[in-house]
Image 1: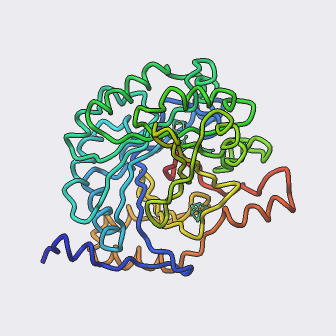
Image 2: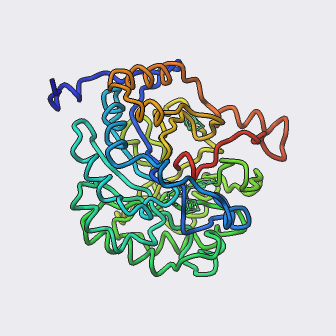
Image 3: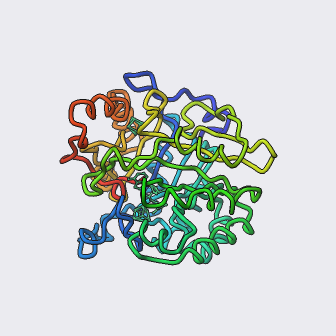
Length: 351
Ligand code: SAM
Ligand code: SF4
Ligand code: SF4
């Protein structure tokens, strides 16, 4: 018998070994991308890379089914990501499928924005709730240095505009790399201040194995906040919910807010309630995981919903991940960088 919305909402979330509930599912729908951001998918390694064959991607129906199982376990927020999710030709079908499910408070997407202008209205109509656009600089040269020389700032700005016109709440993700884009961030804030678009700065992270991360490339959020405060008066805003990763600050003159995601300088593993599903149906319980659990196999060989619930419950109940909290200690012993030969790349598991 199908459950009512109230039954779904009252359902307790499964908890991991550190008592963290499962609340958030990031669904990577594709591992390919039209950008080559050096911090994620450097061109020299990925221009001839063999990405997943299309037949390995979960179909819109399979994504919907897996999401419905996660919703039964307590998930309330769904986010589509990748790779670049708007490269999937059936992205609108994927959103429409998820929008039919009971229990999700929110369906969001993270995109590089290059194809957002053409898709924004259809995504809104399909039931998408929110959009996060990644944009590292408004300076055309710095923009290209941050994304491997692809695309145009103007296309991303047109995408943001189209998303606003379609009625989406919009946030920006801005990765901050010392000496590369940090001199252009005041301009970025200035541009979006007062528009309702919330800029969130993300500390450059040591995800995956190929981005050559060095601790000195990170601009700690506190340092960036001080630089911004030299220009604008900003006051902290309380978090919206447990597990919110961004620390928020509002402009005292009422012109909106900005956020900081400080995974390196202020890890937030204690509240981490996220699972990740890759395009080929592998489930990961941490962004820094070296392996995951296959769901596509069971899905395609006739597993029932209760089989899938049992499998995922087991995975989450055994979860102990807290990599970012441990990273600080690892760096004390090996300051040139952390051990990473085994990590799954972020574009594969979904950022
Ligand atoms: N292609 C889409 C995009 O760029 O928005 C979605 C996937 S991308 C992997 C998701 C987010 O991860 C983006 O906002 C991106 O900037 C961020 N990201 C990728 N590599 C990162 C790194 N090394 N450190 C911090 N953030 C990173
Ligand atoms: Fe593509 Fe996003 Fe990775 Fe950049 S961060 S290469 S846009 S998947
Ligand atoms: Fe969550 Fe892993 Fe990131 Fe910690 S390091 S916040 S456990 S994804």
